[in-house]
Length: 208
Image (tube, rainbow, N blue to C red; front, side, top):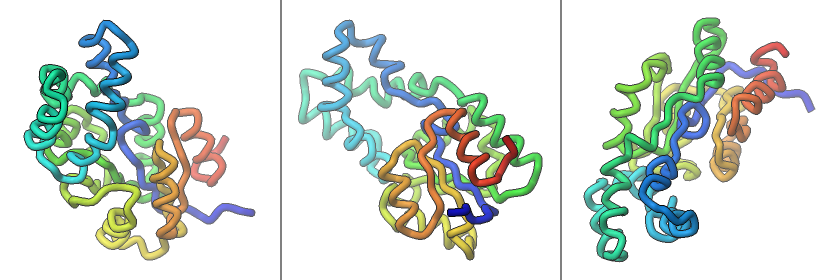
């Protein structure tokens, strides 16, 4: 089945264009690998972090978790206290592809990210390429997160994407890909520059 002609590309940020990983901090804190994985899966787990991405304040999220796991208070407070250290930097090859598309001017370029409203300004200040997007939808500002249909609809309506089937959404999480497809967007999982290039070639966005 042939792919539709794409006129809009919507990028997730963390894991697609920006290398963000809590392990960059907690490998420095924990000597034991198993304890670190326990901490990041059972204490400061992804589902907890998502609540801050959905709009809960960092202070409240931290307080809730410290009350639940008081023995890990120092480590829990480090999660947002040292959050900037979790940003390793841009994924250079992927960002270069994005910049090439921006320079070519052939597609509308948007971003849709699950990100805390309190920490996103750090990324905006640190990474100049974020200024090249036509627009960025940040879950922490909208108080709704991927893969909920509402956040994709916000992007579609705010940026007047009249033909969602001609918009391609890239994310490193399959559940978010499914969420995008459910509202009529084209969507593919992308977790490396090689995969991004493969998707772009497959959709005819760039030539092999």
